[in-house]
Length: 434
Image (tube, rainbow, N blue to C red):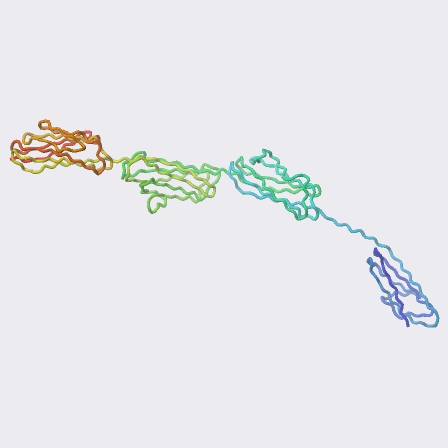
């Protein structure tokens, strides 16, 4: 036996429907083939079908010689040549996103953040990004249609461009801002973000007692309201007492340990709502003082305040004392009368005037010299120039020297007048002369 092989090789391009044919030589018999051939008479056929470019197929044939001499066989190959064209299909794909605040206040500036990216396989050419601002938003350029990119820009695969669009809110209500992105080789895409333009407001007014005496109570009314277009949360109202004043009462409020403040909290405060609060204060000091009330909402930065002023007045109260020493006296002996006036009140009194009238039993002789007044003896009457002012808790004293003139039960009558005492007050002291 002997073996022969057939090598089938394709060059450059592949081939299809490949058929290899060989003939068993005369004088030989077929033993085996690999791969197995289709045998018909003396002809061997192999159907190899498709062969890839540069692929090699080997066919082996084992024969047995039946005679001596030269054995020859011829092989033929038929095939359909195959030429392949590879086409890569790719595209540019734009993606646009817009983010920004859900709410914004009227007449305030804010920004939208824009991102445009190419999620495709090839560059997007001549990319255009347009923002047509809706009514209620204004750009510094005063244009309502904004071209955010130059037309000749290209966006490579995976590339992202981020932009900021600053705007101003000019109208209350919901505004939706559209972004449109397109390129010459990509589909148009859009994005839209909506923002609620609000007008939050707080208002507060405070009224109260215009005049009050110190040490007494002054009442105040605080009205806080929400005249805006949006419901508010966590509103706080604080009433701040003036220096030296104290908060005595404030229903539903938390009063500080030193009684200097009262604080109310409103967890929810609807648009159009109104709340009336009250506070009672007192002070030991005279003067004009203002009580401040403040309303705040931190999240939106709202803060309003109002004040009510009260003139706190004191009240003068004079204590008049008249004492003689010694008592009783003999005719011809002397006695000294001391007149003391004390301002027990909380306000000064002015123009304090003393007039002393003696009866027949005693004659006034002289008056003690004082820096604040001058006394004059005129027969049975002694008068003093007025004391200009007597402050709270201050005292002044006048002294009159007198002598017994005749026996009897004497009555010294003094008249005290001032700006407070428009009708003079009478005080008497008895002295027995024997």
